[in-house]
Length: 520
Image 1: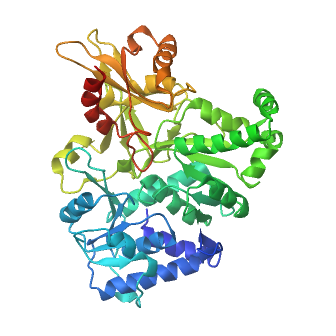
Image 2: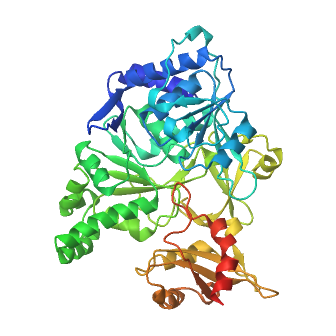
């Protein structure tokens, strides 16, 4: 076990002037920070925090999009023993105020522009565009242990009091090292970062990348043209993303196929590809690999369900797609599909040192050095979720004969019919999402009056006249007890989503009665 600052110090000693972090500048150039420079910048920011008389264990919030100075402020804060509270860039002021009150945070690292949007700033600003510097006194640095807290990661708090997941240095570093053993990132890799560092999936993988001596390139823009430009000019080899982003990349490539009127050749290549060894498929799809920069080799997908057809499409093109499963409480990675096992239906095997078992009701339980010690100042929630060293994920699943974990859905979303049969909303959503006429869908079990629960779909689509046909097509693929009995059309361009693009189910459910009343 080790601490995060020690991991950075060791990486700087080993990789020195090799590029660690890169990001586009306003002039279009790429600013590069070497491993040694990253350590020196972190030391300078830590020196400033020492001058502010901060104490070990005090909290600091970072409210910014992912960028080089995000990590500089992160490492600098951890060096002096502070606990980082990462905030999504879209965090609202009332939530920020609540987190400040809950944690007693001392500073807010953000831009002047973002800070000025606050009507009542709760704590002093540290300008991330011009991070203050000081001279670090190494003798005054606190002794850090792997059990010391490194981060407090709060849920969005859309319903009730948000929970602050406590993550220690040992939680995060053990998870980063375990992920490296499975994902096989090396010094030669260069990863394009598009997910927020406020999300543990991106945070832990970036710690792993730096431990391996590889480089991180921050996109600073999600415009498809900009991303493809960076993939090409920066020789990107890997990306961590959510399935929806993976789908958007595929759509971009398919648009180019249509523009060149090569649909027939495209379809033929996809029929041939399964019969060609994986390593040779990149030659079949040379156009795709040129579009990805020529050196790209793998996506790591997480944060939401990965449709097997989507993963299969990329792998037929010679691009490896590894699927990860995790939760913030597990720092966050629990399992990953192994590099050389081309499986699309499971979320793979547990990371080294991580154990998984199933409760009698098939809830997934996790044990290992990556498991959080609990929730910030919330002993009741901690006692409910962490029992006997095992974390109760709230996810349902099963383990097959090869030891691969399969997910069935969230325990709280499970629909139990009057006849005792269980309906997993995610199973129905996955069927619906294969329909080209549908943008997205959410399934609920609705009970009205004294009726038994029925399967109800909330549909997101451009042409509302196609809703009934979409439901009929889905029902033909579903078992009788799974079939959709009623539906509602979502009236807006998109569902409310988290920063990792998951649908905020509770927000949709809260609006559903009013929408249904309007339809009657």
